[in-house]
Image (cartoon, rainbow, N blue to C red; front, side, top):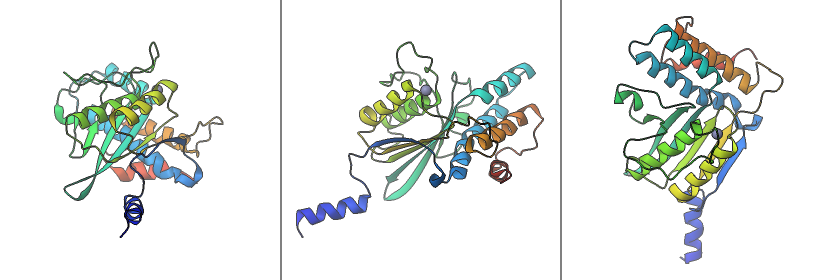
Length: 245
Ligand SMILES: [Zn+2]
């Protein structure tokens, strides 16, 4: 068999060349926006669950957490890789804002295969910096990028996988730069796909952003005892985010 043919076979088996691109785009109707909304909502659900397990929060602290969450950017990333011949997925969830003070390490990795992203890891120096002087220093995308960097450099995740990320809104200029650095400096130009919910300029509740916001509100308000959702119930998310129509 010729080496050219071998190369062709390798390319088609791998599905993509090793020098794959960074692909950032808005979610369109062809991208099954409903599934994308549900994926972003996983980070809201995890945020609510972790906060709920955080003991002795005052009513005021909970109120602050909820109102900040209503304005925050949420992002969910899935890293698909192969380990010991098995395909695996690690999920990284992020909400913009300062790192939470989680008393229990289990809350940072609530389950096997799931990590709640942080900006800072003790004793770890990141090469990923937001634009100087920008307000993006606590953005959700930066948290996910730093967490990928921390985990790959500390051999908690292998290189060679594919990263897919869903964000509740378009990445800002600073975060776009950070994602580019993640792609080139950390992930050796492995494929990175980023999709974000479109701007909802008309306030349409049935738009992807409208559905996301309605469900996020219900999930966050459940922290204040006003909601009816069971924690960790994906069915509740699904029903809510499908909404009317
Ligand atoms: Zn940003």
